[in-house]
Image (cartoon, rainbow, N blue to C red; front, side, top):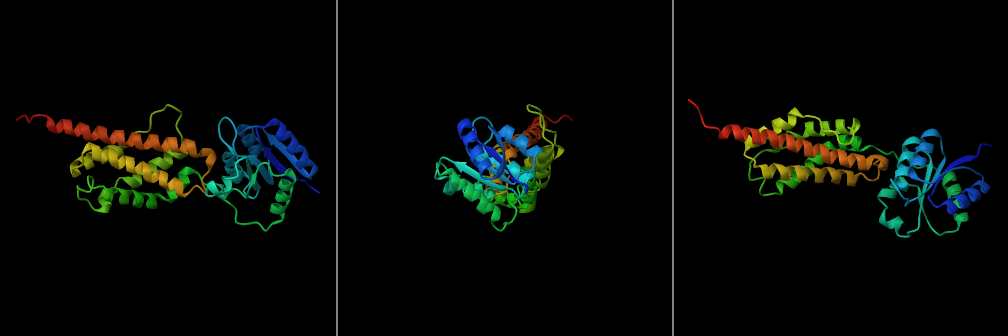
Amino acid sequence: MTKTRLLLVDDDDDLRETLCLILEHGGFEVLSAANVNDALKLIGANIFDVLVSDLHMPNDGDGLTVVSAMRHSNPKAVTIIFSAHPEMKAAAAAILAQTDEVFVKPQAVVNLVEMIRAKMKAEPGPVKVVSTVATILEDDAAVTIKNWLLRVDADKHIVWVKLDDTKRTAHLPQLFRDLVYRLRNPLELGSHALVSAAAAEHGLLRREQGYTAAMMVEESRMLQVSIFQTLQNNLHRVNFSLVLIGVMAIADEVDSQLAQAMTAYIGESKVDSLPNIA
């Protein structure tokens, strides 16, 4: 009979070795990793039935990063996070919706074995599918734009310029397409963002509509807030292994598009300030 294959992830060498022995004695085939990077390599090269991972680990990533990777590669695997902090169950309920169970140290290890067996025997629930930041923004672009518009409409300094919703949001569909493209085609660290003709056109249009430079900056700030609110609302399905890189790319792309829009805006202002020559 094929043994249940389990991945154990913990940076504490003594605890990891002890757990390996106990889990193997309990009938599991155990592979182990001491850090997130090693865990990700094992997940990429093997099929697992169970993941047991510590939540807090040194260096890059944590247990949630490992869970996200496991959900992506082995969506049917039972995933169990264990933590030394009893408040984790309540405090991180939304994030841990990706995880089947939270095991709080220092419960008896025999309870962990029993928990895994119970989860393996239980009727499988819906597969917890994780999504990339790009997919979430693509799926929820309309919701994010609506949220942004509510923020803008509440700002008396911006709504002083009378525009209907269609004109106010005209630049955003293309901006979201640029964002999704950027997220799916990441640039090397330190590279300049791509040139956007749409961003320059937006800067010129906002000037014609009567916006000040400060109003454009505030709109851009509100856009980032709305985007991050969308990610916050989707923590239960976001792929944590990529979320930090995604957030950095979003901030850089939105700032770059604002800079390009402002360059066009200021350039046109300088042209208009030149004296007329007969």
